[in-house]
Length: 561
Image (cartoon, rainbow, N blue to C red):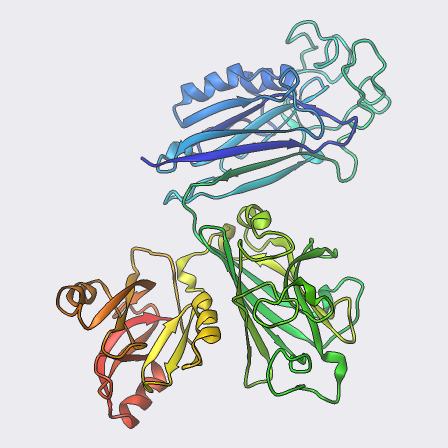
């Protein structure tokens, strides 16, 4: 059993003079508690909630079902109701290993009304834990066109029959004996929409309660946890001029891959752009890439906050010659990322890698976007986008919206999304260091004796049953040289060679030799520096075997992509 704290927050999004919500019923279950179905009669529990806001019978049915771990009724501040603009939240303790806590359900009555309500009719719509117990953040917006009619009471809007007016006792309306359906809306010019708050029995004005109006929003529900285990989330972005709002046309294109780590405090990114000049403003050495065309000179790169088709404010600045005061973390104007590395490629493109961390001096903290990223579904947009500016188009020349990958926003380890970069130690040529993105920046900025040779392979930073861990040891005989080993060899080194190698910890996860799931990488021992190793595959491995006799092939060490 592993207890985690899960917070449910509910905000009434209705406008001024809009609808109110009765206390929310919420339940956590194993996916087998069905609250209601459209085109079928409402259960007694749903009828009592939809007509009177009474959750007692729904709760009793939930407990009797035996499929749930916990249910509760979340109250608002004034007589329990949740007014427009009001936010309420409650934190629950759940066992993330208990299947009865895996799914989330909710119901609330829309008032004033005869039997209008909101809720999820698909009892498996909202998982909050996966099968391994990793938490899945949830954020959903309930719109006006999702309001349901229980079909149990005629929508006459009479004061004596309408909850939140002068209904004297529960269950006093005219019985309908209908089916659950989407609500058609309040009567135009009827008792509810015409109430301006001046009537003796009216608790408020409801002139803004027409939830059938375009864009009407009822509520936002978020389910979060500060201590539950999570998996990383993979995102991608295609960058082009077609996404730019209100700017010009550019030849620049590109793509990006990003990974939000399991802790939610670091977003690794790798952005590659083509047909843009990064040399003119000193981002890469060698001067202008296209000296005869200043129009394509890159002046700024930001991550901004807005939905596709809209412009938003700066969230994080990568580079900015127009507003250099934004930051200067690595000697780059307007830079807020101390991990930024900019690499010119042989084809003329440029790759920017770095890590947006919660501790960076960004305009808006990364933490503001973590829940949105985690609760966004597969192939859906996140309200963040790359914006690249040039001399010709100071408002933006190319843009790329961030999109969540991988089936419901969870990064599966099959993707091997983390690149591992290879560095050669110039003080001991033929010896190598392999690092992930964040350590790469540190090596480039602080250790000039290491020369980067590019991406060596891709790995996972998360365990799985069919992966093996590789641990990194530094040679104490030739400092700055390394070996990567699995569990068995690690134990042997710790037991018998601790004077020659110092363990630096878990490096990453790969497939084992013979798994036939990736490219096989052989381990080569450098006889010029005993105890140092190179890992290579394919043509490079064959070239080493043929032309570099100082390297001994010790066989396949692991498989990676």
